[in-house]
Image 1 (cartoon, rainbow, N blue to C red):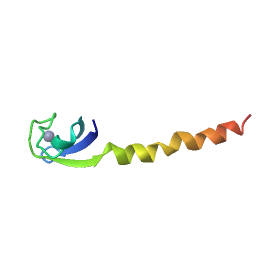
Image 2: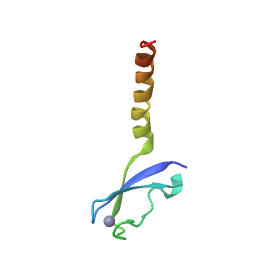
Image 3: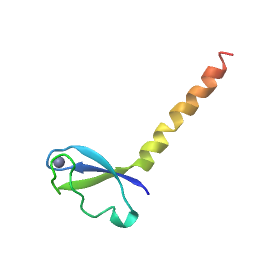
Image 4: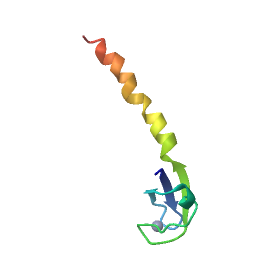
Length: 66
Ligand SMILES: [Zn+2]
């Protein structure tokens, strides 16, 4: 199940939820204030792809120490 990121329009707090594709655009209550004025943001796919390059980039640098 994909991870979706939401932001509350009332208290502006962000939160993530594991949801099905069919549910990603349905309304979800804010865990902080309980408001239903939430908006879906970027998914974890873009975030995971960007951070995946960091650990692999440090691997060749450590091998040069040996
Ligand atoms: Zn809220």
